[in-house]
Length: 294
Ligand code: UTP
Image (cartoon, rainbow, N blue to C red; front, side, top):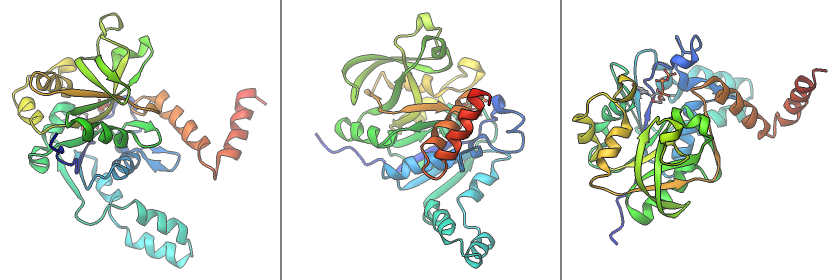
């Protein structure tokens, strides 16, 4: 088989209104909500970097300027950290920065849905396969989920979707795939449906906010009418793309936290804090006090 084109570009749609998290998201982007001390968008960029992504495309909107600032240098802050001898903090800030020229920002002028947000990246992506990461889905796994997906992509050259098992009561909030032949590291996807009722769902495997897509998706989005919730959905375009191209599912090792929901976000903070050597001991003591009411 001819080697598939390398996945060099990742797209991060960050133009949504975050209505489930109001009033926190009235003036602050949902994607800047911190889990412990890092904003959600930083986790998604780190996952993409680990997978070998070379260019980071952000689909932003009104009130999202701080995301661009977050990935820029802050000279005053850097100088102050140097003067105060906080060199470790300075090193960390510098480590998180993309290299100059590695980022692009474009605006989705109206939040017309995820499919529309992705379509806004069409000129920046061009005729290449690309990764799509929804930053409000925080994934905890080692290696990162996009790294696991790239492995499946390099074997097949297909479109790739990361999935995980969900409880029946959660299924109607997500896209769900139908599973064909293959194992967890790469199986055939034979169908997909956006936010089905639990009884109509083709499986319990939900789409977890990570995709590798071929550029043909853009034309399909262009010709698309509004779908579920009056929004232009990415699942509808993927459904059409399935008529011409293969899709592979990766049931990744790890778990997701839907940080667009309050419970998901709070749980993520607990799990990520307990995994942090610098605070886990003290935090666990506090949790025990809260749990026992003492
Ligand atoms: P969500 O549907 O979870 O985000 O989209 P939302 O619409 O901001 O949230 P709620 O439902 O109102 O609380 C997943 C990702 O897609 C982006 C969001 O910013 C989020 O990162 N998105 C969504 C866009 O960029 N544009 C859109 O039109 C919709």
